[in-house]
Image (cartoon, rainbow, N blue to C red; front, side, top):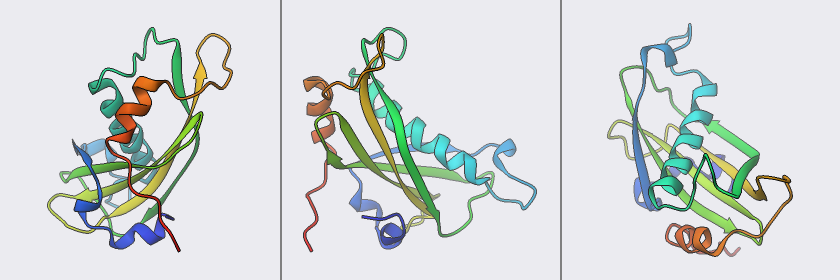
Length: 151
């Protein structure tokens, strides 16, 4: 699903959320959260999920996920002091990669202010070579995986 197709997704389309308060410094000169901050929200929500479930050791893990692709579409502004609720789900789980779909919901709004995707490729830390998604990670990712779309 493309980011723009996700425009009408309700919160219930996501299986995991992380609430992140915006900061004064997140606003740009136009008075809303700058676009670069959204990628930080994506990264924070995905990694908080993995760390919280014990499948990502950012300091000593032998296998880590590298971001190889990301994108975001913006639908309505977010500004400090809003709280963003970042919904994540797994759209595709391959042999060595995972594609997350992410919705950014402002305060209690039911439709996203922004939506995007984030792709991790798993690599061995020592050699930066692609490896299969570890079984423990795969099991955790399955808990937020959505059914494949058919057209």
